[in-house]
Length: 323
Image (cartoon, rainbow, N blue to C red; front, side):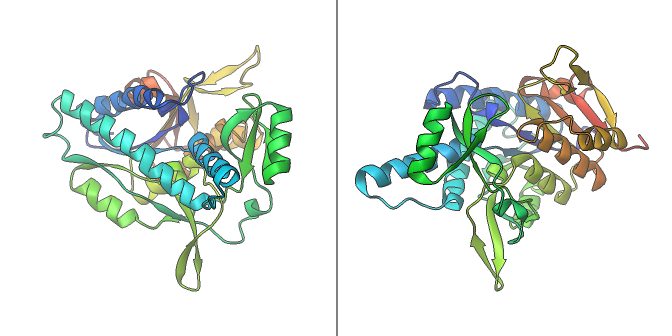
């Protein structure tokens, strides 16, 4: 890799809200500045950067706010695609300002970067995607079983146990096909901007009689990040989360961190079911797809160790079989 390599950085939920946070505005800003520090370090090393992020808790919170407004005031709730668009603006603003300020602080704007831009991004999905009949994507807050059952009866929501504990609402999560705004994103990156795009996986839309139409769903952020990274011909897909590595037997006494995998090894472990579908599974699948689509390197690492991961000092590397 050269110092001018394009890195697509896919932030997880801990870029905004860490476990134990109340979800207050100050929590979002504090965490966003930690994420921004990671971006600034990459830029300082000469990397070109594009950023994607998740929105699972936040889109669920917005949906709950809307339901509360409907209950108390009779305000009609917006659809889930509109809620997703709202999170792109909300979280994009916070990341955009935090990254801009960090770059200014380090003297990297003006200089190595012309600016930071958020693109409200639409993501094409197939209208017959099987997830519409079997919702699996977690959104919103964590609930105890009794509270989840009550909300399910009241609003018709579907809840499932979260692998990390408690119960969360689940919605359809169709496989992303492509980003509608990808050419604009490319142009901005080529012009020297850091682009925040595909927020929450993008707003899910389908082609309906040659027109775009939003649908009630949430797209997996990591799978969408891969689509963006591949379309941008990025050199590296860097998926940042709250663990240092992908693991075999995660959470068990014999847990084993995976430090370097070939594509074939990653596919083997993924197909054997070693990675939970609600957490590490989509990250490993995104990494696999990125390498299959011509990417040079995919990394899964901790948010605070982005630069160390690029140097091979931390994180799980997934590389082509010939590397």
